Length: 304
Image (cartoon, rainbow, N blue to C red; front, side):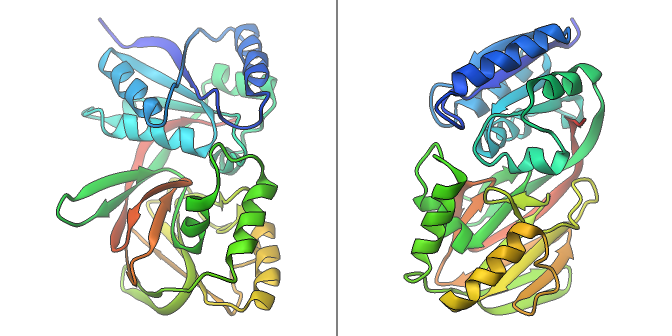
């Protein structure tokens, strides 16, 4: 028996705004109107999306869609990459952005409009997308995955403190600004294909895509299929100096700023003193040190 061609839609009912259920029903109607054949499973607790995805692939499914935010996508990517498939490019992944930030969908050009989402899935246009890996050493070494943006330092510090599901982009920004006065920047050493950044840093993004942190356009030049990670490191800043940098981060004009360093490479290593929290697609995954790498064009993704 060949792979099941029907779509399995993995829905996070807790994702995004309180009307998430009503939003999903509009998308469900749009998918049917577009002639998309699909089944639906709702997640019930954190990590459930990965379990559903892995089980579905072992049962012969190859078309998976995830209705949720970046964290929901990250769970499903973990399920795909850890399912033991000989070739993960057999899988087609579609995102239905119903979260708060939907940063990965923004890079792909996927809107929240149900008709546009349904049209993209029905159209079947795909690209081969890089997938990031984070190797965390220690007594029990572990590999975590990301498809959008990972980071160490202040962005992960804020991520650790934001309630889940994220109430709004404003909540994220408020918590980020409130924590700046208390935060002490670690000393970083970052190496990427021969380039090095060292010193006290506010944060370091390791980007496979362009947006993170609820619409921050952190690396406008990042491509999701070029086999390269983009590192954006921001040095320690005073409270007064942070405001203009935030404006540049959200508007996509941060590259070239004197407080910022930009490296590119296939492999990136981050060490800090003291250890710093690491986030991947908005999920806390561990602490430094860590090695970041890419599986080039490892996953087929629906695009408009």
